[in-house]
Image 1 (cartoon, rainbow, N blue to C red):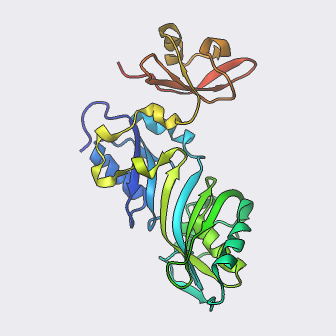
Image 2: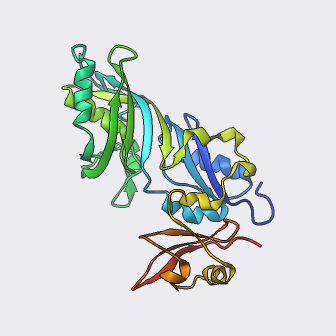
Image 3: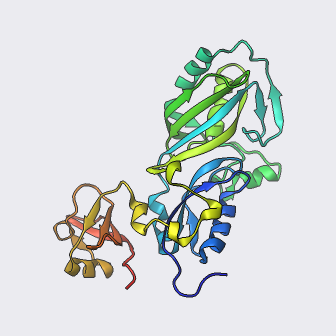
Length: 296
């Protein structure tokens, strides 16, 4: 049951177990942390494991600053077999004899899928088209045309095969990239088909698997402070008089806040507690995007 009082605030880096949806993880975290105020920064496929970043309490208001972060993954591409979901959970939709394809062929094809590319979102994804999520349409047996969307793949490295036709891969990519689609496109580029298995997310932005907490071990004491939601973004520490203005959501001159660059800025008090997130405003002023003055 949720605890009495305001409940915990902070950021949780969870190592999502296999067979759990991101929604399942949020529901479990609510019980473990004793609060209804839990949200996640981006879905991870049920079969996938690894980093899922949660906002807890007042930090749920900061999830927008986590949504566009780049991702890093490892997984395995299985050549010669295509599936309905582009991963190992789906039904087999095609088979090819790709025994003649060697590691060098796979690496060349992967190199062609790096940089700025266009990618068609899979039907079994959470992307919305005309107000409905694609996976909801797929479950109803409906398949629709999807417009390709621009994504960026910074790294698509291919290792030595771990079994005939099975290649370990490492991917670093922009938010919104589907690694399942990369695997399927790799198979197509090699003249056949492929699917993805054993996907594991190693990082979301600066949040890595090394600091992730197993879901069963998630307790309020393992939460990072709310300011960590702005990890990697500029921070501005303000004195008491300015902190009072920030806590009331005032529009300020840049010089008053001490803000340089393009923002957004995590504004903290002298103890490093997050007061607000400010962003550029008109002329030479800045305004609050989120006010999160620390509890007394």
